[in-house]
Image (tube, rainbow, N blue to C red; front, side, top):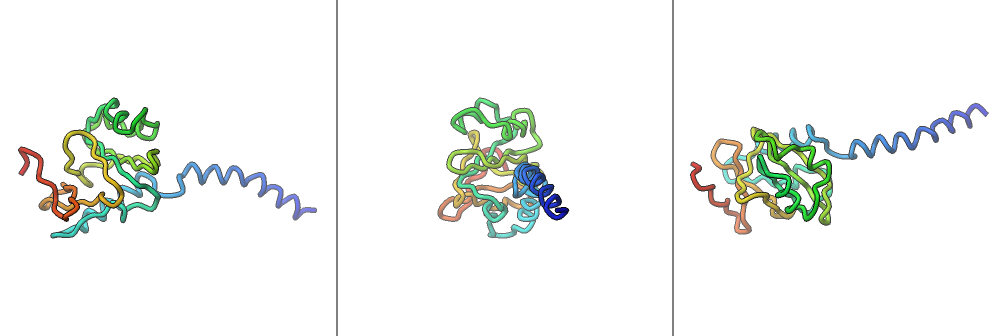
Length: 164
């Protein structure tokens, strides 16, 4: 009888444990993602490229990169509707120290991270930049943390006007 009561306690605790796992996201959190991205960026030299897919451990098919001070309305338009709370929580509309990396799967936001510009500074122009999983490839510009998207032919995009 004691064994049955003990087992029943575990069954009662099971929903709580499942809820806890769901809250943790079951994969990378903010600091783990930033640490992996930082290590990956540090390792890129010469003509090597950084493939964003190699830094993630979750399923996604597109990434939307938001520059500092990207307004809420611009984010909503880029997402095709109101941004979910996890994107709003980035505070990208009022911050200049981070870029927003918003990962999508089938058009729905799955993850959103604030990436310090000291870790990676993607060279994006004209508002949010959207990349497919296969096209989210970047090449370092010089010795800085500035990374330019690589086009299908493997060349880095032209630097922004006034840089360099």
